[in-house]
Length: 375
Ligand SMILES: NC(=O)c1ccc[n+]([C@@H]2O[C@H](COP(=O)([O-])OP(=O)(O)OC[C@H]3O[C@@H](n4cnc5c(N)ncnc54)[C@H](OP(=O)(O)O)[C@@H]3O)[C@@H](O)[C@H]2O)c1
Image (cartoon, rainbow, N blue to C red; front, side, top):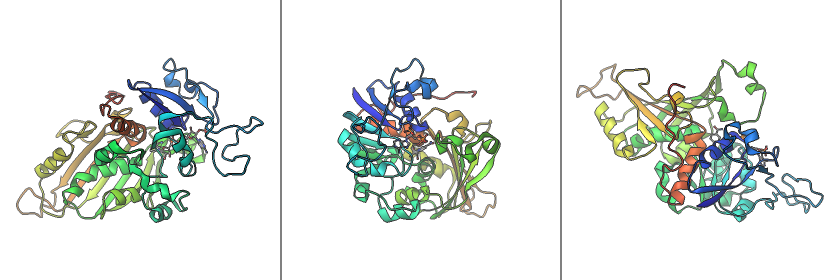
């Protein structure tokens, strides 16, 4: 049994971590932090957890002598957090908004021997690449190389030995998992065009005009036609690949779908592609190749993945131009689709999968939920 705590437990990723960890047989939960809800029941913010836990939120930072919560500043003027309210645990999950954990990570390292960060501050190993994509300097660049990138299927061996893991971003996770076998087998040309369809929970719980119901409901909003930050993660993990990402928000709460256009380097058949995916992912517990000849769920579909840790991957080889010899092969176009639940395989589920690997637990532990149909 290990004791874990969650920093940023009132957010959507933190709530999903709680849902999964409360059902995990090898984990007890120590502290769950929130500044806004300190002292309140966790289930008052995450109503799905009623009768599952009596935990209350802890304020993440220590108190000034006057009892107030300084929220990032010490009386001595040190621009750092007080971790005094946090007690030691075996593993700390950090689920803070982007840009916050980098200034606090050293304090968290005093609290726990192992850390899994769900945010983006420690995903990129190179500080200059971080600055280029995040438009600011990293506050603690020396720590960047201490974190293992957390997509379990790619880094299982390193994660087993790791003290610090940084989970992949959700678009990056779906795209990397979809492309990795083709990349590894040198099947596709470098340039890949990724169309990502996003859900509203990807923006977290904070509200803005763009999340206001009259403005959000029914939209098909070009959220980021160019310049998507997850480009950096894909380039880091699949060196040489040039991802051209366009992301569009639609009116769903959970789920993420990518359609990736690639060009085969060599004449290839559908059978070859099946073989490549089966070889790479045949034994993976959370990856399914979804490509049916008929039916309404022929390809990956985020709707039926809600709450699950699966990444479903499908593909279609475009043989329409029949430019090929031998017949049945194509160098025309290979389209790959992938779907995940952004809050599970895209963040909290990936984190728990990594935890299972780090602590030598069975990799599926706590992650067996199969999803709902119909939903
Ligand atoms: N949502 C997704 O689909 C998704 C997918 C992949 C990765 N992620 C990553 O996961 C992380 C969390 O995302 P989220 O969607 O859960 O965000 P969120 O809903 O906005 O939650 C953020 C949490 O952090 C706490 N917090 C905010 N500012 C803080 C500060 N300065 N100091 C201490 N605590 C602070 C918030 O509680 P208080 O304000 O009460 O303290 C809340 O518990 C992000 O880095 C995000 O990129 C999210």
